[in-house]
Image (cartoon, rainbow, N blue to C red; front, side, top):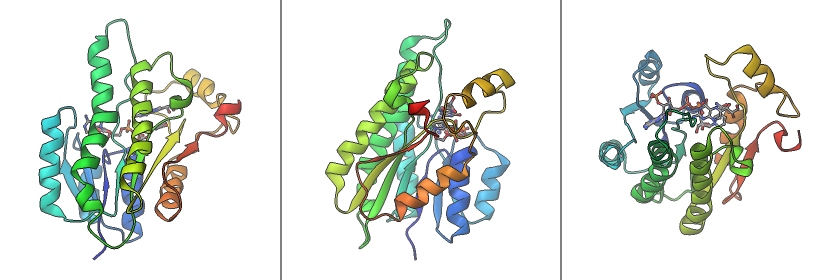
Length: 235
Ligand SMILES: NC(=O)C1=CN([C@@H]2O[C@H](COP(=O)(O)OP(=O)(O)OC[C@H]3O[C@@H](n4cnc5c(N)ncnc54)[C@H](OP(=O)(O)O)[C@@H]3O)[C@@H](O)[C@H]2O)C=CC1
Ligand SMILES: Nc1nc2c(c(=O)[nH]1)N=C([C@H](O)[C@@H](O)CO)CN2
């Protein structure tokens, strides 16, 4: 029996696409979701093991790990996808924003990687950790300061865990810029954002799924980042 891939935050969008792509290839998955959606039921019906988890507290992380270990004693990979794109605002409490961003983008992958090391190493094949970071790790963000800092912390986890876990486990980042807009994004924002990259497109989840497959099937990549950004760095 193939060991399952754990995908966090798979109730919608990119995480959901990851889960569907794995299932279509006969790869078992365990997914976390925070808010219930019909897509979770559909994933369960398609064979995914769906576990409710809110990583906003360490107790929530630890409760998830406890449940996970009742489901499996091995993991093929962990995809740290769960994320909150929280902007600063005049009303926001800066401490709350920074703490929330560091909790989901740094504490959660840190704590899960250490807690699940045995599951990743419990087999003969090399396994994977993939951190979903962000293009803003390179450039910062004037409107998502804490978010960018927390994704930079996540990017550094890739370096440290690569050193700690090689050669049994490969650890890489995928650093997207625009992959898919959110429903509430207006035309002006969309037009402005599309102009930020050389390719000038909203690529959709397929490019993220392609990056996932590339990393899972490349035995020689660890400690690296796939920049999925349409040439934004040169625009
Ligand atoms: N979409 C894009 O264009 C880009 C995406 N990325 C990165 O790619 C990844 C996927 O992006 P996208 O699909 O848009 O992500 P989403 O914004 O849709 O977030 C993914 C999921 O994370 C879950 N989540 C948020 N906070 C928590 C928490 N405290 N505990 C548990 N789950 C939580 C949400 O759960 P729920 O909704 O169930 O509450 C959500 O469904 C993210 O890491 C993102 O930062 C980077 C750059 C661009
Ligand atoms: N958790 C999320 N992170 C990010 C999202 C998102 O929807 N959820 N979206 C972006 C933007 O697409 C940005 O890359 C381009 O404006 C960034 N991170």
